[in-house]
Length: 306
Image (cartoon, rainbow, N blue to C red):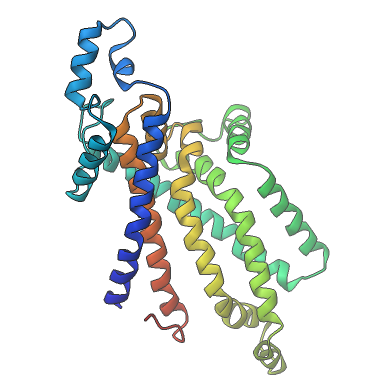
């Protein structure tokens, strides 16, 4: 199994290299000068030229690209222009906040989607099924950019139950986690419903019902357990999406995570920091997919990794 995961990880290296290359080229093509951001427009031309030389920004693009790849290969992400600190340290100071928020949002997503999907499949064609369908449509139609401010206006400003922003106590996690997990819960609900409908029409389910098993046992111990393979795939992909898609939510709630850090790096034209953030997000996505593959063999012993 270790050989399988090593092989899969090696296959992802070209994808990571492509991500690095695309980000490197795009941030150098987009108009804007990090030196002007750091010194201001009133800086003397000689001072700007000296700093540009110190940062290596006056070198040819291909030279900067080669130097960056060599640094990454050695585990060195460079020095942040904005924070004047190693990029690796800046990122990993913020990464736990994003990871905690993504895990909590995933729990919110699963707590909503799995019971709702199972119920909709069990009550297929009834008012309950249609109500779940309407709620999932609403969840898909409202983006995080709109849902976050709505939740803030209702629960923070009008009712005063929850804090508006920041990462303080446990209450600070509720609104960002719900905002981040709501849209994904709508997607997962539909996937759970579809997988459950397929399993509920199988012969083994009809046999279980003929034996007189309780409905809950048929749904959970038999149908849901066999439907977990496609559901696990979607959950794994969604967790990777949560890590990458937390940028908007973290910005709305002033959450000190890697998503908000990415926005700050873009605003400051902080090339090393932005490249480091994108690399960590891409690497997290790859590792989550590898973990999903491992979970297959635990959920269903018939699945063998080779």
